[in-house]
Image (spheres, protein in one colour):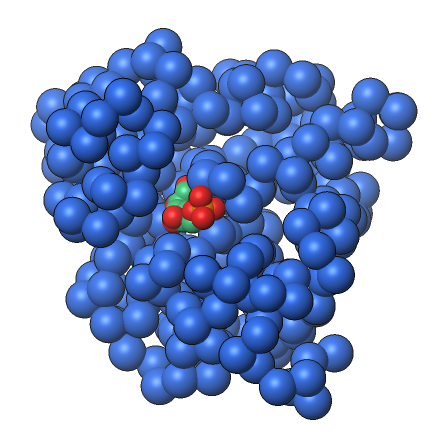
Length: 248
Ligand code: F6R
């Protein structure tokens, strides 16, 4: 089942997506949330923090697993996804940070780290709700075009496009790490529910191809068409390639 909700703009998108996460937390107070970094979820996290501060949400029993982390970067590095999650969510809500999991960028042994991270996901009993952004090339997590649909957590060599896109957060493109640990499409597909968020015209083609194009490894997010519970929340600009009658 795939539901597509059109939001008026970014703040409407953020509120709608936060509402879905909030409903999940209320229905299962110890649920496992799969979390993403990047620009798109920032408004969602701000909204969740706001509801927490108003006393409407309780994160004390929540467990979380993040999609990815750069390899070769310390969690203290301000560019790490670990630092991102702390400053944009974890430090502002009552989540027990020992229950938040992100791949360890400092582990040099890729095989060991990927195995360890997969074990964590399995021991938690899988992911109840996976939040996903989407790359302009249709990537999810760091699963770039051509990635196998079969993979669990693995070490990825970042493409030149992704290095360029992510260089906006670093002082130069050379400073962007060349490798990352990412959960795989298989981990994502095993999540019980997926919430995909997309904002802006620059995501419209990837979103269209992912939701209505053929299911192909060259468009990693297209596999989501085969998942049994995907909710898409996107703004008008991101949905501009999709005809309205396909929307709820
Ligand atoms: C982030 C992640 C990436 C982003 C994607 C979109 O943890 O896994 O796949 O979701 O690159 O990024 P933004 O939201 O910055 O456009």
